[in-house]
Image (cartoon, rainbow, N blue to C red; front, side, top):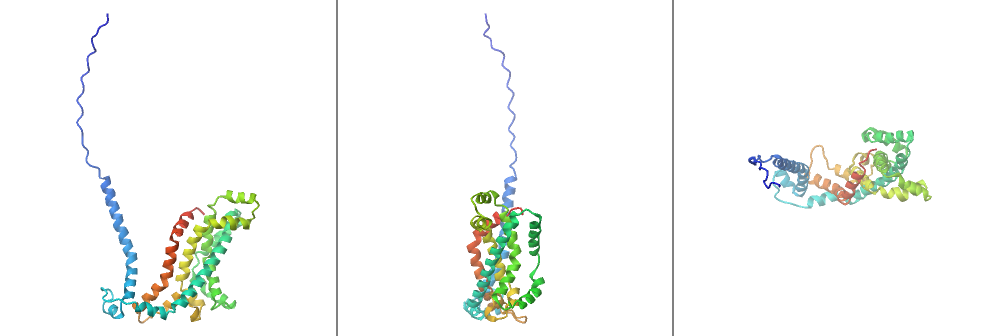
Length: 301
C-alpha cells in the first residue's frame, strides 16, 4: 500500500532587496566629448574661413572706407576694384597663359609619370628599386636650389622666355611626385588582369593603354589637382624664365601690385581673388575624384 503523503516543502528564502545603481556617467562623458569636438571643429573652420572672408569684404570696399577703418564694419561696397584689377593685370591674357602652361605641364607629367611607373611597379629586380628611390629623392629637392642651373640650361637651349622651357621645368619638378603616386597605385592592381591579357596576346604597351591606364583614373585626378594647384600658384618659375610681359602668368601680374613702400588692399586683394578663382572651380569639379584617388592610393609602396 503506497502512501499519499507529500514530502515536506522547503521554506522559501526571502528575496534580496533590489539595489538601484547610480546612473552611469559614460553617455554624459560621450556627449561632452562630442560637444567639445564640435566646438573645436567650428573654431578651426573659423580660423581658415575668416581670412578669406576678410579678403572678400575688403575687396568690395572703397579705398576711403578701408583707409578710415581697415578692420571695422564696411559702410559701402563697390565692384570697381575688381574691374580695375581685371584691367591692370591683363587678366584675360595672363589667365590664358597660365592655363596653357598648366595644361601642357599636367599632360606631360601624367603621360611620362604613368609610363615610367608601370615598369617600376612590375619589375622586381634590384635596379628598378634603386631607380624608384632616385625618383623619390627628387621630391625633396626644392626649386630654389636648382633655379640657377636650370636658368643656364634653358639659356643654352634657347628656351628662355618660351612656354616650352617653362613646361620642361615643371615636368622635371613634378615627375618624381607622379612616379610616387602611380607606382603606389599600380602595385595595388592584381597581376591576374595582366596575365589574362597576356594569354589573349596583348603586349606590354597594349596591356598598359587598354587595361592599366583606365584603372588609373582616380589617382590621375588626384595628381592633376595637386599639380594644377602647384603650377597655377607658382611664382618663381614664370618670374625667372618668362621676361616678356605678354607671356606672364596671373600670379606674376598680381605680384606686380606688391610695393615694398605701400600696399593698397583694394587693388591687391581683388587681383589675388581673380588669381585663385580658376583653382576654386577646378577643386569643385574634381573634389570627388580627389577623395577617391587618395583612398585608393593609400597602399604600401
